[in-house]
Image (cartoon, rainbow, N blue to C red; front, side):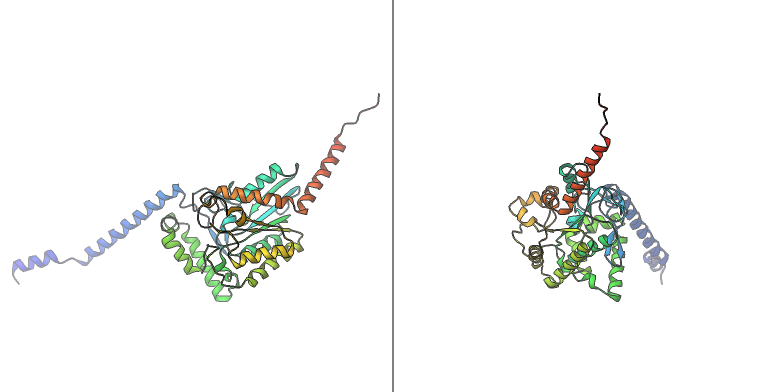
Length: 367
């Protein structure tokens, strides 16, 4: 080989160490960019989404957090130490307080609205300003994102059985009807599902994941990943139940029996989706019929919103706007005030006030 040829070979040949060095630099640059993105996105709230932990009975429940924000709009979302969306810790005992728990999916949890804007907070405000004087009212949201009706009712039963002593419960319809069979998973299938919940929770610690998957690419990527995890849809009018309405009613009947056993009064909240003008889903009609047959108060939000400006009352296909939440609370107010437990609480407060007035009235001596 000539000297010229040897020189050409030496110039074109790349030592193996040089290739590894370039790969290492590329990895370091990638990690540096990820670090910059992770740190840079956090001040905008992308690292502050609510985290969910696996739960053997309820499958996924919110972890407590005081500096969380909603996935949409990035508004304050406080989860109390018991895992409810409420501004303070909820104790078991609540003497002198009329307590209402609300149960449902992301609508009840308050998707895209702040702590003081969801319908539970709005109802509490109305009750404390328009309720009977002297009685304090609590309305605590126990809604959880993506819960199907079966888990909504399961959580209601657990809260009642755990001794939180609600005076009333509001059970809202969930549009996640494709998920109804998830609580029935057993054995390895249930363990596998709980592991996926845990992996999803780990991913939500990352601002990068939240920004790209749950925000920027939500329609393209997140909902597709969600369908891989569990089949379902949020459109009440177009979805078809995987399980018959009898399954839905059996769970509702079980929840009602638990409420009755603990002397807790129930209100049903029939929610709908954008442009829905009648109960289009079999479960919605089943809830309506069940309420009529069992004389349970039901607030029909489909009728309320069907004639309203849909862009004002909904922020997307199913989640109410802040205005929509106010309207729901206004409709729930007379339903709560019509309960016998409400009347008893107000009557008791009136008697206590009268007794206090008599015992504290100054005694005057006769002249």
